[in-house]
Length: 420
Image (cartoon, rainbow, N blue to C red; front, side, top):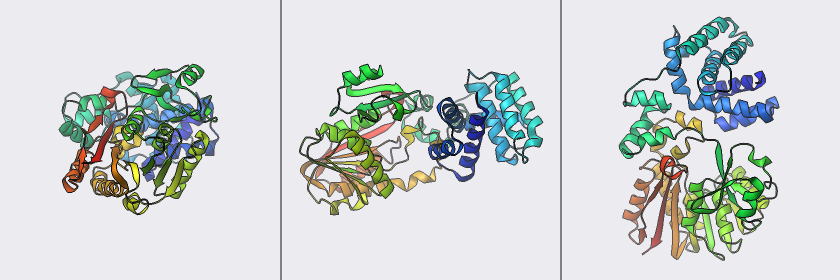
């Protein structure tokens, strides 16, 4: 096991804690800076993501092992302790002596923390001897420690999904699989499955499960034979049901996965406008479309709330894949666990404005789809119910909520509206 991987993971943890940086961006920057690749890069990612994901559980251990409050320690020492505990309790292939030794070496490497090497050694040895300590009970505090989620999120899910909140918490940790969507314009699912040796997904004829990892290095990636897209997002595209020759709008489209799938369902015939607010993200859509050979996509910069000014009343299909709290993807994005409850409050108003912007683009008889990757009724049913109340000319089918523990997908919400 690499000391440089652990050192880099420690740097990432310190940066994320100090500046609330996104873990994936901090990881990418650190890997480039340190020149890590292969097994070292994989170990660094597993450590950094794992500690962020399990931080509340790890800190609960430290509360009873330290004589002083954890926040009083330097950030580098906190990172070293958390990394050591994570390896002791969650990485079976790492020998305990290696987990402890490498964590001690991390604090020794800095003048600011080297005096804490005996403390780190003693705390981790006590933790090894005692084992993982978890509180009992079903109260929010106990569940917060066991599942390493903020108490406000546990309360939200307890109230909103009383029969499912434990299942959601149990499935809130990352898995080792990624779903890809086969580019049916360039190959068949059977051919790509044989090439990659991977499995089909029931109910999704052009989807495959592959091991998580460096997807860009998979056979067929450079040739544009597939793109990464969770099963829930593929079901969302099925709800849009774009047809060859349609004018389709994908609002808030970056990085472009749903645009790509819709364009393939259109057989690359017609026009799909992929709109996003940020210019650099529009570039991501353009790059992806070029790799996949999707010429019907036009990526544009624009505010989805004013989308009606772009093609008023002309689009047969409009997808409003709105920015959201992303609570349904917590297993893939561990830093979502650090969100504050207040961050959710401002979202429904913006989401509603985008849905109304999409409506103004719609041709008579067209289909309007609203989607989020969150499990929060205020952002889902709340927005859609308001839309129906204020736009009686529209009707909606049953709202669809996908849950990881039931559907094997990201947490996701889909609503489909049509003119009466």
